[in-house]
Structures are given as structure tokens and as C-alpha cells.
Image 1 (cartoon, rainbow, N blue to C red):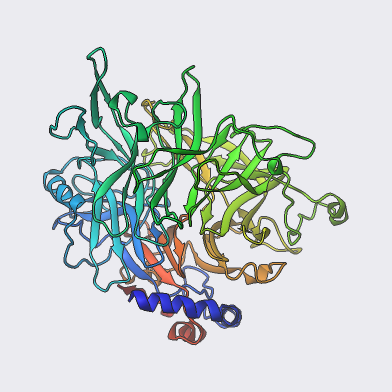
Image 2: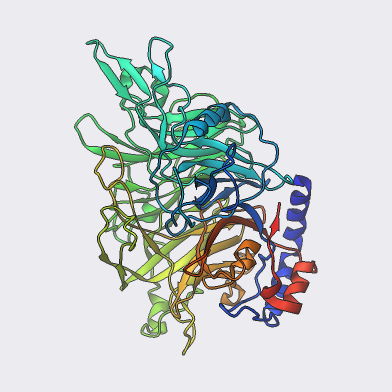
Length: 635
């Protein structure tokens, strides 16, 4: 199957120009046979179920999955996702952007990690808390964990990587003596990620104190409550990538470079990659720490976890921002904030700003994962909006010719494949109002409604870092007079964080994110239109011409479409939420989460679809019968 996937990918690269024409022709003939939503032809039509509410937790005959984070997928079709499972009657419906459907298991592989997992599952029965998830039902104790499934293998199993109450991997215990491990996982705050070119995956885990050291005063020091963990390519052992272990623990390779202190927290999701020169496994991450004067610091770093190397700094608070990202007329700004990075092919990209809340300098940067690497500006405050943008009617086009707008807002969630970077950005001073309300079910502890103002002029961009070209793929606002179905917003809000003020954890607050994923010069993104339509949209071969044509955008799925398009178990249930993350589009395969409900019945899942070849039965079905004849297939 993997050989088939690779060969299919090579064929698709050659036929995509013809494919795009086929899509446009077929979109004019697709039959809108679904009564609960308007249907459009889309390149993604044959959906495979990775995991859904009908699947049992590995090793359990009573607990089924009910809630899911957005998945990540590698080039070979290995999917990694965070999920929750509950007793046989399911669980509560989760938050938006975390949903999924279950796949079928086969023989469960034995791994070093799963030995401990099986013991944990047998003794588990407690409830857990976590952010979000699509799902339904009510049931017993909840299990939260990180799981994988290889969709390139027929009848493959869902495998557990790590679960709550499982022992964290070494180091775990006393410094001087070999004793029973003391630290166990208690939450997984972020979605897991996977290297595109290998099976190396990484995730963030919180735990009870996992390391006990004795200082020079003979005092006991407990540490090691937050860390980044990984399973490397061609191995089955869960290992520690880095953890916030106290310096007295004697593990120098985990310490802040040049400071000697420990990291306190690792916000966001770590990004694994492979060093193209050595083949070693690297992990790129954001780290927060406190300097010797008591000041909070932050930066982006990487570590060679195969060679057990020390942490290497790429950029930190106080470092100079490259001049290419400074506003005109300014010579010097320093980083005040850095966002969690994305890594691929031995490189890292990240968003860095002078001030996170009110930025006046900064942008998106790329660096090789090497000592003393220089930063290359991908987009910054000097970057002009590409010339294919269409201004709002209130702006005089003639005035823009001599004074083109420049970007002044940048999203944190970057999708990167080693060459192409997908990102959200805004420009201009106009804003739109967003009234944020808490969920009525009371799950957002500490939540209070707020009013936020975001850029009126927003765009989804694709940067070619080799050709030094920037493309505006989609923008907010009408592109012609009288248009009503234009994009209004690409930002989505979620109340998240720790409401109890626990030391070291991010505080609870409203956070906005744009959701997108790139696969070479193809891109998929989430958007909200002025007519109320919300969904996933995409474009292929964005950089084929210097001026991207908006007519090349296509609709993949929208809320209100029949859930049967994704999963036969959800037939007749309108799609209620859709989710995608930055590693969710690889080698022609798109991985998403979705939840479906009619207010009484619910279903949810993680799904994958390939970009089909022109002339296949999928496209033929589109021309004959439209989306009403789509059905998912099980791997």
C-alpha cells in the first residue's frame, strides 16, 4: 500500500494542471443532491476513517473513543492524534476543532510504551479534563492519550503511544538510586505532530513530579512536571525529548543554553524533523524560563534527541529582529515574543514579534537547525501585500499603486514542508468586531465573554522560500460588486489554558488561531464567509503563475453538509464542526476531524482523503451524481 501511495503521489504531481481543469469543469455539473447543505465539487472525496466513536480503546472491550484533536499525518500515511475514550456509552460532547471517527483494529503490536499503557488502562477508571473534542454520549471514567494508526496498511490497529496515569519515560525517579518511577502523565495539552519524511512523532505531556534530586544542603528537590516526548523512526520506545528538570538533577542537556537554568514550560506543540546531513532526529520547540534576575524569558530552540545533544538556541527575547522585518524608517527592534515553531527538512520557521499584544515589528522567519544559524525573513512589517489582492471598495485603487499596503499582523500557526510556508497575516488599520461567548455547557472553567477586534484585511498566504515569492491565496472582503459569499474571517477563537493559575502553565484566556496546512504548493485552510458558511477550502499549484487566480479556490467541506460524505455511520447528520492542523496535509493526503449532530444524535471522527487522479471513478461520480453519492471507505 505504501508503494501505491508513493506512486500515486508521483502521478499526481504530473497531472495536477489537468486535474485543476477537471475540477473546474466538474464543479459546474455537480448535482446538489444534499438537502441540508449546498454541495460543490471537490478534489477530496474518498474519505478513510482513522478512528471514530465506534472504535474501542486499544486493549479495552468497554471504552470507546468520543473526542479528538486535529490529526497529523506523514508522507507514508501514519496518522497521530490526541483522543479521549469513555465507558461503553461514550462521553460528553467536546469542544470545537477536536473530533474524529474510529477505524478498525487488527493484531495489536507490542511496544515498550504499550506495556505500561496496558497496565494503566486496566486500572483506570478516573475522569479527566482536557480541552475540546467532538463527540457525544455519556459514560464512565475517561482515558486521554496519544494514539496512532497507519492507514497505508489494511486493517491496521489503533495503537496507544501514551495515556494518562502512565509512567513517564526515563529519567523518572531518584537521582542516585534506582527506585520505582514517581512521575505519571496527567494531561496532553497540545496536538501531537509527526515528521513528514519518517515515523518520528512528538508531543507535549504534563505529569506529576518525575525527578527527585538531592541538593548540596541535602534537601529534596522535586521537578520534571512538563516535557516533550517522542517515538523515533524505526523504534517503538517512548523517550524523553526534554523535561523541566532542576539543574541539581545533573542533566545538563535539558538546560537553557548559556544560562544553566531549567525550562519551566514548553508552550504549543513540538515539531520533529530529520537532519538531512546526519539523519538524526531533531525536535524544535518553544521554551519559557526565568533568568537569574527573575525576568520571564522565552525563545525557540531545538535539540538532537538521537545524539542526546544539548539544547541549541535559534532566537530568544532580546535578540535583534532582522532588518527585513522592521517597519520603514526603523533601524532596531528586539524580539519580545516567539511562537511555537514548525520544522521540516532540518529547518525551522516561526513567528517572532516585538510585542505579542500590539506588534510594531517582526514577522515570520526561517533558520537552519544549526549552531549560530542566521534568520531569513519570510514575511515582515516591510513585506508588501502581493499585487493580486483586491482592495475593499472604500479604498481608491489608484492610491495603492504608489503606496501598496504592507503586512502588520501575523499568525502563530505556520505550516511548513521545508520549502513552502503557509500562514495567516493581516494588513491595514481597519478592524471588525468579534463578540466571544462561553459555551453554555459550562466546560470552559473561568470563561467570561469578551469583545475582540481583529484585522478587517486578512489573507491566507503561501511563501516559496527557495524562489523568494509570496502568494496571496485567499483574502477577506468582496472581490466584485454585489458579492455576498466572500470570506469574512480566517481567525477562530477558543477559550483555553489553566483557570486555576497553576504555576508554569499558560493562563486561561481567549486565543485566536488560523487553521491551515500545506503540501508543497497546495494549501488547505479553514474560513468563515459573510453569508455564514464555514468550512475547509483549498487551492492546488498556487505558484504555477505569478498571479494566483481566485477562481482556482475550491470548497472541500462546509458545516451543514451531510455527515455521510465522511462516514456512513453519520448519514443524515449535518456536519457541525471541522478541524485541521498544520501537519494535516502530506503527500496528497488530507487529515481532518469532524463532528456531526442533529441536536439529538451525534457522531464524530478523524478522516483522511487523497487527492484523486482525473479520470478515476471518484471524478466520474462527481460528474454524474454530485456529492450525494460520496461514501467513506474503511482502511
